[in-house]
Length: 251
Image (cartoon, rainbow, N blue to C red):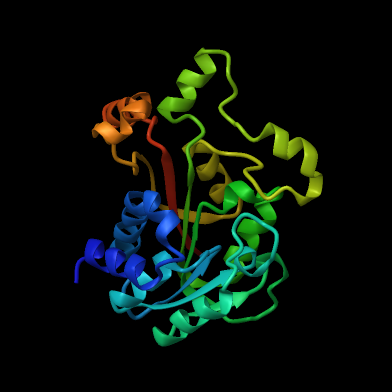
């Protein structure tokens, strides 16, 4: 089974919960390919902020041992909540996927993993140093940490800035919710991720900017043609892809 086939199967298995997340398919495929390139199937993986488990389940279908950790799926009255979570739990159980209902920052288990994965999570953290330190605690010595996060200097954001608009679009929610805010506290450029890893003495194995979302010039997407143009051009302009990925080794 290829990575693409496993990801398609994961979406199918998790339907209807995964239906409104199909727009992230290309992004998830990029992560799946990177993760499987850098870690063997003998190492257990922890997916922190796994959501409904799309990436985790795809890894299991490829023969990896994976556990997930998430809190928002279980918390009512938030954007990420799953209403019929008991049905979702049955799907997880049928594929031996265990998802811990907890906040990483409150997690006290001493269990460690060969790789800790965190996709689109660090930008939601008001205290990134504390978050990365907890990821380190969950990683075996010599194990890997995989971080993926939106690139604040993607090509679309650069155009927004040139037009006098903020590259971050959540000001109303940020202003009104205060400490309860669970959106993007801050987005990063690749050199900032490298700095954070260096500050915590994490050996950098791979660090790259990539354009994960593909352009779509079909008729049904023509009203967003500017977005597809930016995605296409990002393949050729260094540092303007939508996603930053960094992989480090715990010394």
